[in-house]
Length: 258
Ligand SMILES: NC(=O)c1ccc[n+]([C@@H]2O[C@H](COP(=O)([O-])OP(=O)(O)OC[C@H]3O[C@@H](n4cnc5c(N)ncnc54)[C@H](O)[C@@H]3O)[C@@H](O)[C@H]2O)c1
Image (cartoon, rainbow, N blue to C red; front, side, top):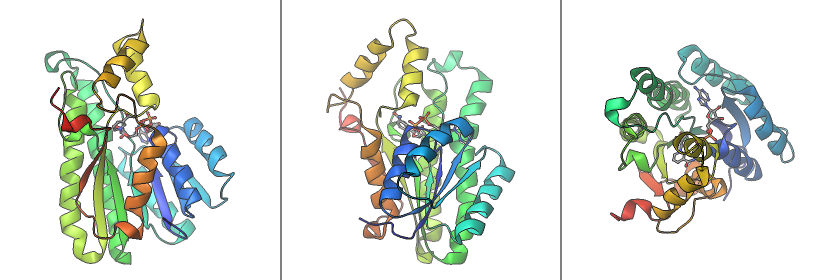
C-alpha cells in the first residue's frame, strides 16, 4: 500500500488515532499537514513522525472555528500544493450521563467539535479537492454513529451526523473523482477511552475498561495502529471504488445484540 507523494491533512493529529495515522501515512510516503488544538499534543506526534520524514507542516487550529479551518486548508495548499487525503478526525467524547441530566452547554460543545468541525473540514477541503478533481476523505465517526448505548446522547447524535455528512458529501462529489468515507471504530486504546474511564469511574477506571472490553466479541480494545491501517487503505488508490461507505472497525461489536 502506498501514499507516496500524496499530501495528507490530519485533524486531531495529537491524539491517539491521529498520531498512529500520521506515523502510518509517513511510513507510506505521504507529506503531512498535522492539525490539533493542542500544540503540546501535536509535538508528541511531530517527534515520532520526524524520525520518518521531514515533510511535515503543523497548524494549531480549532476545528469549530471557520477561520481556523480555512487557514489550515490554505496553509496545506501553500506548503505542499494540494490536499490528496484528508483524515477529518478530531473529536471529543463529552459526558456520560442520561439525556435528562445532560447539560445543554456540554451538548453544544460536543456537536460543535464532532459535527460542525467535521462539516467545516468537509466544506473547505472539498473546495480545494473540487479544483483538483481528486481526493479521498476519511471522516471518523464511531460505533456510536451506527448504534448506541445509554448515556451517550450528544456523542451519538454527533457521530450519527458524521455518517449523514459523509454520505451526502460522497454523493455530491463522486463524479469529480473525490471519495468520502467514514470509519466507525469501537473502543480503541487511546486517551479518549482513558478519559471516559476516569470520568465514569474515578475510583476504579479499570472496571470501566473491563465493562467496555466485555461489549466487544473480540474481548479486547482495538489498537490505534489497526485503525491507521484502515485509514491508509481508504486514503490510497487501491480503495478507488469505495465511496460513501460507513465502515465499522470494532472487533465485532456492532454485529451483536448481547
Ligand atoms: N478512542 C476510541 O475508542 C474511539 C472510538 C470511536 C471513535 N473515536 C473517534 O476518533 C477520533 C479520535 O479520537 P482519539 O481516540 O484519537 O481521541 P484523543 O482524545 O486521543 O484525540 C483527540 C484529539 O483531538 C484534538 N481536538 C479536540 N478538540 C479539538 C478541536 N476543537 N480542534 C482541533 N483539535 C481538537 C485533541 O486535542 C486531541 O489531540 C474522535 O473523533 C473520536 O470521537 C474514538
